[in-house]
Image (cartoon, rainbow, N blue to C red; front, side):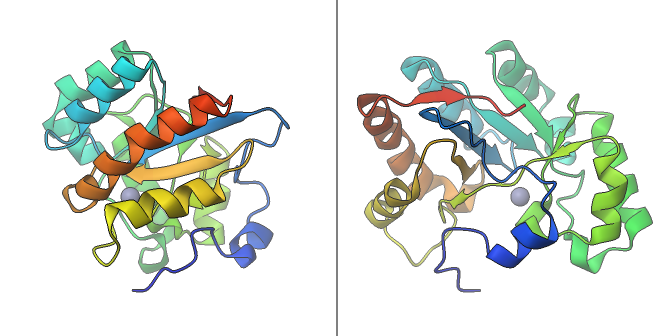
Length: 205
Ligand SMILES: [Zn+2]
């Protein structure tokens, strides 16, 4: 799959205007988010860096990973970050019926205490969204880092992300082995650059 565009397609924003795509308050704030963890390969490194830079972020967790690594989940919370539900099995909404999908989110909610939800792959059916919106705020993103892409260099990942950031941007990165190389290169530089430009980092709410 080729994902040249680092912003979500406009059609999704039109279909789902009640999702959060960006926190558009006009203030110089950005929202760093990490999907798919927690995992021992990425999350401890991420937490260490965020602590060192004094930055808070939001982790959209896969329930099954929280079940496997509860101590990492607890560490995320203890260190002042926010968490969100990202289903239990990282399901693709478009290939699931609504009942299965919603039940998988409910299962994840046994492990993840949050009223925020982000659909894996950004793919969700209208009926699924309608059900979930009764309980959750659905938080998407306006800057997709492409950190998981194997066809771009870490330098390119960093450069492309920096170009797309504007006040209120929600930045999507991953705690996933495939994304690790690009993520580890980009995040520390991005934090330093944005601090220099006067941006503050906020958690999703
Ligand atoms: Zn995901």
